[in-house]
Length: 127
Image (tube, rainbow, N blue to C red; front, side, top):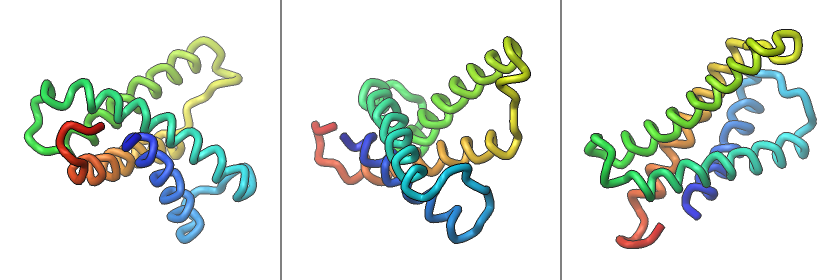
């Protein structure tokens, strides 16, 4: 649950930062993006939270934030590598875009930070 909540909050945060800064132009309208970022962020957060619950005691890092950010960035890296494989298979349809790659990495870091904040405040024994 914490991962899903962190993902949805992260999606909204990224949309807000983009609306304030105009750093990246979204392809769709606000409602469409809010749904996509909430759903995608929630799913990404659910997976990150699940890995955190499974690996929390096994990760070599001391702090919660280091653990959650490393898990989130590792998931992003796996997805990025998958995108690279798609790009090699069909370069006309799937092509790497540096700005989107950087945005994805920053999204993963922010998600990890939000998840770490929620995780450090959770009662012992709960997920």
